[in-house]
Image (cartoon, rainbow, N blue to C red):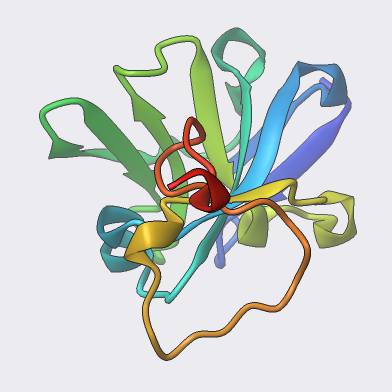
Length: 139
């Protein structure tokens, strides 16, 4: 499959998807994403689940909550992807794993109400209090 590709740090776990399958791109500030990735903010993209292909070694899955699964490389530990039962038709990939990080164009901040005080991101992207339903300016 041609299209957008990515990999883990050691290169064992790889993936691909067609650019036409992209649904959204954005930064997440929720506690679960921060802890799972060891970062103050996590940059994700969502694609149609059926378009996502693991093309290298099989990643390991971790059930991080009753409704969410996260995938990571069993060799180097790189976080690779996320899927939620709340969004069953989507697969979420980490922008930092893209082979061409210049492809990524974030559109918003999600769960901004949970943002850490010590990280200040200065951009003009919309900031949602939650997963994309309530803008901070609406509260």
